[in-house]
Image 1: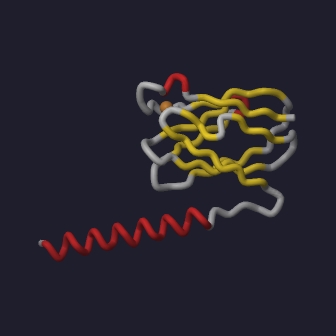
Image 2: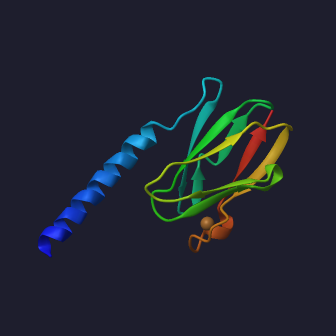
Amino acid sequence: MNIDMNRRALLGAAGALALGSMAVLVIANADERVIEVVARKFEFVPRELRVQRGEAVVLQFTAPEVPMGFSLPDFAVRADIVPGKVSTLRLTPDKRGSFTFLCDVFCGVGHEDMNGTLIVT
Ligand SMILES: [Cu+2]
């Protein structure tokens, strides 16, 4: 029984290591810009993202605390952000303007105010 549990712990650690290396290996094409976004209680960091119209970007999300969501309704895209994983969202904005993004997974008392702005120039 004890041996079995130790083995499980070991496998868990190996899994975490594998995840860690995967995080480094998120593949972006040469013509894509990677923008890292951290979703934490209760804000996106950075809160403002600036991209150019027609620019291919890969949003790369992590959530250190609890499961979060990223929703950008004006572009009809969203992503789940789960602690311990890196979530990606590819986007090539086809219109200029200021667009609100928000967390769409209830994450606690500050959830309703968890939003930010994508500025496309
Ligand atoms: Cu939330």
